[in-house]
Amino acid sequence: MPDETSLSSHQDPTATAIARRPSGSAREALRSATGAAHLRLHAIPAFHALAEGRLPRDDYAALLQRSLGFHAALEARLAEAPPLSAYGIDLEARRRTPLLRADLAWLGVPDRVGMAELAPFPNAEAALGGLYVAEGSTLGGRLLSRGLDGILPPGLEGRRFLLGHGERHARMWRDCCAAIERGGATEAGRSAMIGGAIATFCAFEAWFSAADRPESGARAGRGQPVASFSSSPLPP
Image (cartoon, rainbow, N blue to C red; front, side):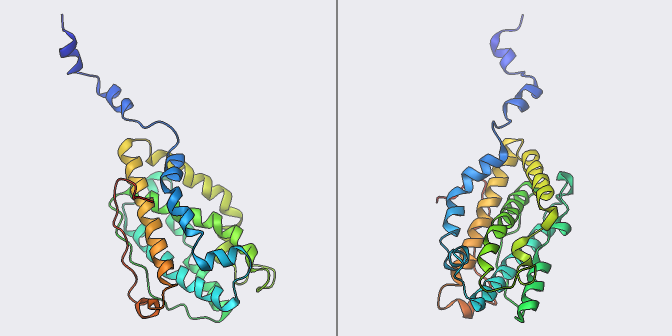
């Protein structure tokens, strides 16, 4: 008859896999892990002024240019990462750089900008973390668009980027959340997603904070160095 030692050394692999499944929602874990980084973004002067409805039109155009530099880089990194189609994500349908270029064209502002430097996503789950940041900015953009009422006429023109996916928004956000739960169903997947999300938030913060420094203009064409991906959260 086998003793306890021999039983423990031949555990059912299915039971072991179940034990390694993290508890709770992957989306809540992402929100908790990135909360400090998210809050810091609210302090970026241009976004703060836009939220309060006091951003001048020229500064809004500059903010869109800066946004293009970041989102073009992020979309490129997502496109070259391991495919997210396994999680039901169509990246092409989620691209927002065409909306940015349309807004800049309507404002009569060039769309030739430098691109932010983002580290490659090492796996699909880390890319889901980056997608979480991109889609979260869509949620925030819809709120920020209200701050444009004093400088733009009613309608879509000039604010397409901030309005995001329009009528498709609710469905696309649900699909994103479902993908996050699937990708974060294991400890390894959840850790990779958190690392990808935090690194993307840090890249966002570095890119937009650099725009507020006097020397940033000379660096705009080269981008800014950002944190590389890590499987554990960075300190706030």
